Image (cartoon, rainbow, N blue to C red; front, side):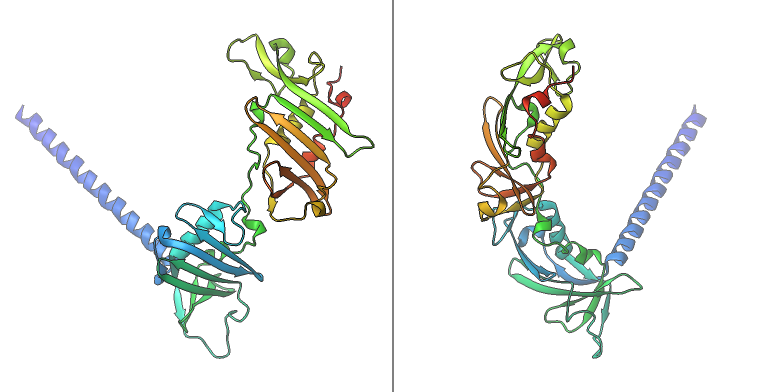
Length: 334
């Protein structure tokens, strides 16, 4: 019995020692990773602040100046608060500036400007009572690092190029794609549209109906009815619900209504974007909310306006094209 106890004690000690060795190895690995990360980012601190303390970032890239305001939760454009920004891109900028480190410090040579005369990006950041301006110049062709200067400091520094890459966006590039109408196409019950792009206007009214499952099995836009396995929901012509519709064309309509826009224009002249002669008008409803959408064709593309929203949004050509079908063209081939 004592021998067994001694064996258990020895095994327990071995387990403890193994656990300690593993902990030391893990700690060593973590320190090595941290050291590698610090070496990659640099050890010369140029700015350090909490992102929550940040209130403003202004930068100039390719001659365009962008001013971003931060309230601790949301980013907005200073001169265009209604513009829908990509919040992730703005967060990346804040993170880059909150802990900006340089790898090397150089004494500026009189015959070299390191790209500071015509910089790639100039950034001014305000966090709390602290405001700093950084100028990013040329890229070192060997290391790939970027040269930068801090206002008030005559030294030239090198830093990871990722610190400047996150600022290489104009206003249009900062747009965050979304659905301005907020339509969930799977919840819609009625769609009425008029297409003005042909010789004569084309008007179509669609609605959802409950159909026998066998009838709906060929309709990819249908969804299973929660109350019965024998019925499902399908899109039909409002005045001829017994006729099956072409699933590809009806799905294109639903995708157009539920899809994202790719750009935004505020305070625009509506006529300059074709809204004095709309290409398509759409009224849609989910039984609780009604939407009115207008699509137009301008000289540079296709655009959308949502009733109640003064902005113009850019869309792909396939979006208004989805509403170009007549009643007969929407019917499924027999």
